[in-house]
Length: 109
Image 1 (cartoon, rainbow, N blue to C red):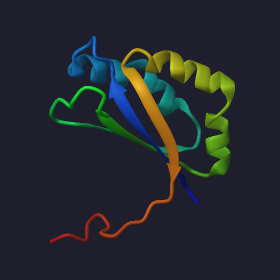
Image 2: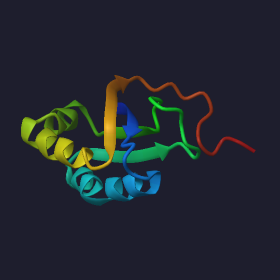
Image 3: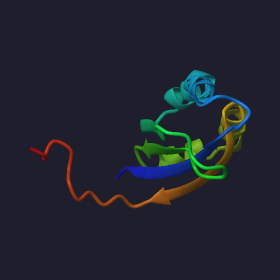
Image 4: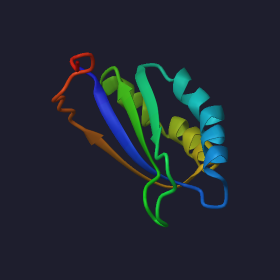
């Protein structure tokens, strides 16, 4: 059974939104792509500027199983990810979730 992790992200205020997303898509995303057991890594960025202090993006990471999540939590992996995250993020709030699907993809008219 997959494990889903959500992060709320506040982008750096000293950079443009486009620059933050460009940096995010670089080394940080490459590190995520290389992790075994990561099934999905999506970043949803608000279209319009948010008020000061508000969250700018929602990140979804889906792991194949609890073992993949444990590998992700390895301090060496986290150190590398946190170092690259500073390139674009000012603050992050992370939590594991139980997903409840009320309208599955492909079921809309």
